[in-house]
Image (cartoon, rainbow, N blue to C red; front, top):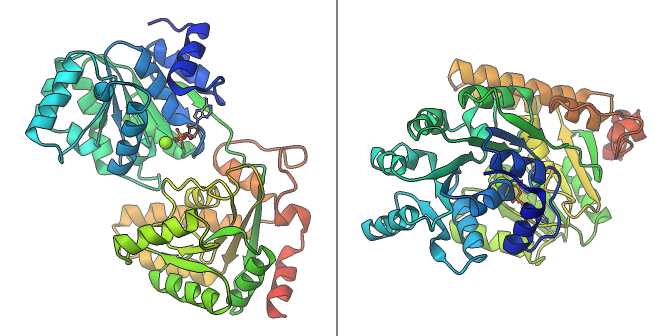
Length: 420
Ligand code: ADP
Ligand code: MG
């Protein structure tokens, strides 16, 4: 199919009701419609889904979308179905379907009705499905969360490594890889593993100019320091990340005792309690959620005003993702991390039980976090450099939005503040 600018604007309006493309969407869609292998790197919330959904809807055949989480696939299928009068326009293929449901999915694909077929990577390895997909028209294969392919990413899934082989069996179909992980290492891995060094690559900026980055030395007074910080942000929504469930519980309790409305969130709580606490945060029945990294995937609360890291994260990607939940609406977003070298040693100890190769990667990623915490240069410049992006710390957008730039002596002062 040949891309045509006026047409795709019309289709955007028709299907999604939007009058403009966001960021690089239009270029990406043009590349896909021209049947090119395409690689898309955009931060979370950048609008990656539409990059493959729109071309899938307007092209002949069915686009296969590989995604790691069943819940996310279901959300997307529901969203696509709401745009159309035909339920069969989008389907999920996974192990929970009955025989009758699978027959219906196959029928809708064969008849050309289904434009988007979401599959988990492990389902795609099933021979029965591969044989079936060989017999139908595939427009392209989109691999969402493509960083899952890389051991250097924050969410490695071995099944993703098999995708290239399976796609090859489907004949000559364009591949679209999409990710919010911007480190050059992960990008290299993705291109290599999917065997698409020829891909047209589209990378959006990862700069979040409205976020303020701050690192404070962690002392034994951290709890009163956090309480003071939250009281200075009275009535505002915030997330506090802790490494362990135990810490989550104890911090949540300390906050409650100090008159701050806070709830804990971690994988040790039963599903009902987790859902309740998440809803309370989204509905603003509580101001603060104290959580392990289990919290946040797919959470879209636009007015989170601060994200506190009680403990340092295990990589700068995690840090970027977690702090990225602040200020989605473009308003204030204060990202405060507490740093002590003892925590680094603790994380290293956790890792020491893992296979050597994994340990090495883990240590290397952690060293970058240490360097970030200890740097005296612009934190924004440091972060963006890590993501392979040049940032001018004098004229760039948000250049003065961090402790090092505003106050080069921040470490001494932070200590004084805490000891008071
Ligand atoms: P990502 O996968 O990159 O994290 P999503 O695909 O989930 O991002 O999109 C984030 C949000 O942006 C969604 O609410 C989506 O509806 C919205 N969005 C995407 N494209 C546009 C557009 N062209 N105009 C307005 N909103 C858009
Ligand atoms: Mg996405």
